[in-house]
Length: 251
Image (cartoon, rainbow, N blue to C red; front, side, top):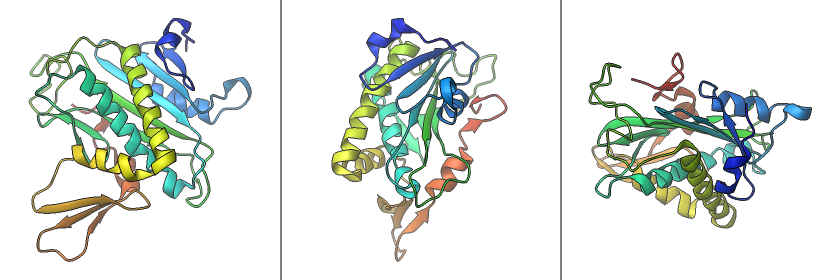
């Protein structure tokens, strides 16, 4: 792991960036740092990122003050921040879409996703010692390439995004995320929730969506009494967009 002073000017205050070597794992490194002791400990605002030509990957350490059952909703602020960073580079006619809870799509094709790390055995009713929000975006390559990517998988290059840079993209995420944290502190989910739901793909028959106090998605459907509940905890734990064997978005 390299502390990379040359990148610090690109990052906002309260963020301490660490540039990792090309094949290091930002999410695993953030988890290790959050749970570490002494010189190995990396506290709130520590942001790890990897510079790879085909994949943007980063993870940030958080130390929330709310009980875990409430603090987990910061995941939505992280998703919004990734989408806002993508919007800066996106062609004007394209927009990012979420598939609940953490997958990122363009034109119906998977481009990346986000995860949330939680201490093992953490008490739902007490503030966790730490959380780690991490994301990946498939950046280089094209569909139907020798790598075998089909029409259900895409990349920033394939979608015609402006030139991207891992450090600058991660810094853009950090700026947007801090705005989300400020909003969370002042207004709770009143802005974060609607911004997330506006990008969430809509299923057939859905009339209204909301986010419950514990972060679960509440879906109202035509002809159905009451809301259908979709668990945030289960969705994050499955992370269906992620291939754990390759440590990258599936496909």
